[in-house]
Length: 461
Ligand SMILES: *Cc1c(COP(=O)(O)O)cnc(C)c1O
Image (tube, rainbow, N blue to C red; front, side, top):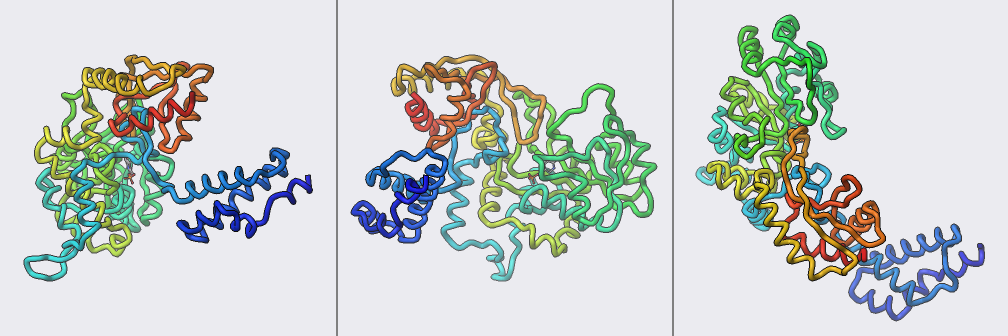
C-alpha cells in the first residue's frame, strides 16, 4: 500500500512534462496547479482504497489533468435539458426568459443606463419607477414596488406594516414553500406576531373577527399554492376578508405566491386568480413572485394602495432587498408583453409551455423523432406515448396537463441507468421515470436541447 502511494509523482515533476508545459502556455499557473493537485488527490484516495492501477502511466496522468482542467474552466452554473415536463421547475431555475427580456438585460448590462436618474430633470430618480406604472396599468393597482423575490416582498411588508404587532392568518395557510420559506418563520424575522385562527381544514369569518384586537396590524391571506386540502374544508373568501378588514379598520394583505396576470381558464389552466381580481376585491397589498406563472426573472412584486406602498418605500430594509438592474430590465420586458394577451402567451416561454395544446406537442414529437433518430445508435430506441405534465413552482399542484412523451429505451440499461448517464453529460439531460420507463416530456423540451439529447444517447450506448 505504502509503495503505491509513493509512486505518485511530485507536482513539480508533472509540471515539467512536455504536455503540461504546452498547457501552461495557455492556462494560468494557479489553475494548472489546482488541476494537478485535484487529480493527485483523487489518485491518492484511489490508491489508499486499493483502486489504483500500477504503474502510473504518464500519458494517462496528463489526460486526467487535462480533463480536470476542462472541468475547472467550464462554468459551474450551466444549461441543462429539462425533459421532466415540469414547466416552473424551481431546482432548474423556474421560468425561462423571453428573447426580448434577455436582449434588454444584455443592453443594460453592457452599457450605462438611466437606472436611478430622471433624464427630464437630470436629478436622482427611482429604480422602481421603471416598472411601477406598467404594473399599475396591468392590474389597476394604485402603486407598486419590486424587490429581490416574493420572500423579500412578504418580509418587507410584514416588517413595515406589522412590526411588533399582530398579523391574523388562518391555520390552513401557514405554508412552507420549497423548504426555506415558511410563513411563521418569515413572520418572526419581520418582528410581527403571528395570530393563528381557525383550523387546518376550516376557517370562518368569525374566526378572523374574534381575533381582531387593538394590537392587530394586518389580516393576511396566503395562497396555499403547493398543496390542496380536500374534503370537509372552508376558507374565507378574499371579498369577505376585505369587508372584515374594512369594518375593523385593518389593512388586508394577500401573498398570492405564483401571481398571474391572465385568466388561463380557456387553456385548461384553472385555479390561479389573476392579480387584477385581488385589486378589484379591494385588497390593500398583494405580493407575488416574478418567476413563477408570470414567467419573468426572480423578483418579488408588491402592488396595492398608494398609502401602504409609500410606507414600504420608506423602510431601511428595502435597501437590502432591492432588485438589481438586470432583473429589472428582464422584468420590464416581460411585463410589457402582458399588454396584449396573445403576445404574452406566444412570447413568454412559461406561458407558451403551459398553454401549448396536445396536438402541437404531438407534432413536436414527430419532428424531434425525425431529427434525433438518424443520429443515434441502434441500441437506443424511441417511441411516443401520451401522458401528463405538471405546472411546478408550487403552482396548481393538482393540475395535470395532457402531453406527449418520448420513451427512451437502451439495450441492457435500466431506466435508472439511463437517468444517471443522461444527468452526467456535458449538458445534462433530465427526464422522469414512470412505471419502469424513462421519459422525456415534449412540453419542456426546446429545439436547442436536441444536440444534447443526441449526445446523451450516443454516450450511453
Ligand atoms: C413561492 C412562494 C413564495 C416565495 O416566493 P419566492 O419568489 O420564491 O421568494 C412565497 N409565498 C407563496 C405563497 C409562494 O407560493
